[in-house]
Length: 364
Image 1: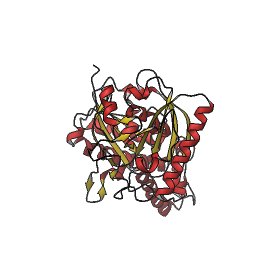
Image 2: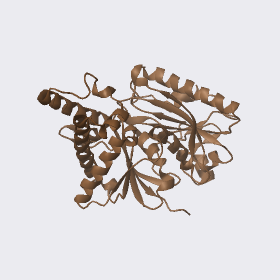
Image 3: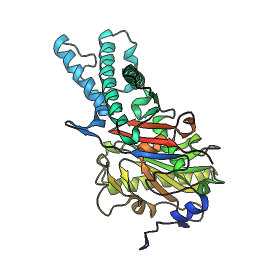
Image 4: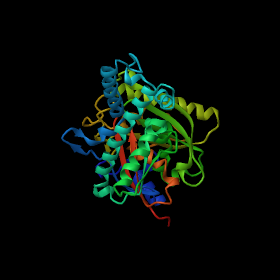
């Protein structure tokens, strides 16, 4: 950025592109092409800490772990033996729900019921916020949303809320949870950048995983696209520094650009990136990035600056990078299916609980 406060990007500025396309483009923006982001990254607290942590993936594991200990202490039996709760696949828990082991099935159902009450409590707290008032539908993203245990918890939470007179839909995100955070990135791109191209680059940076993909752009709204190729890295297992993670991100991106060239796929000169936290207009993470490897909130660190020099050229220059909150980007993957409501939100159940609320913009 120069002394005038203009964001410099390859081939012009974000502001110049916005004037050409009548579509604002920048980092962490509230007004996008098809929706207004009313609020995101709300960090609600109570006496026990962050309210959202009560409905995170770790919270479900803690609930199941607690009930395992109670059952083992009373019945001298643990259906999972010595396997740590964190290492039990969600697919295994799904199978147990309808299996012949009634103790195991009952244990999982009990954990789901308790988690559903926690999820309903968290939703109630969000609905009290000014930015969440009038929400008609909430989609649930993250890995738990694709499992039977997660979907049962959503359904039970919706019943609890309905019983209190809250007319709200809770639905699992329609895209594969591993891909939604990539697909939604296309909604961050100005229309002029997408025009005439087949696909975009996208990255989803989370507290456990990092994914980079190529998203083929669907006709009409970009969120109808699909992931063509994706690279996945579970960085939590490798304990990288922040700089090592950024280098790995650049390497994964470069490999995908090479593959797109071999396949004659016409990439747009754009990369949308979702990551936890509150993002300022320069692409810096102001808060909420505590689960990322290293200190991504350090004064002076900017992902755009750190990454752009390491990325390959696309066409005549480096790609335009646009960063937004990861829950916002996951939610943007749902834009095409939200025409029947006006105000809707997303909660992403992962390492923490991501959140965003949207209002549809009227087509002009």
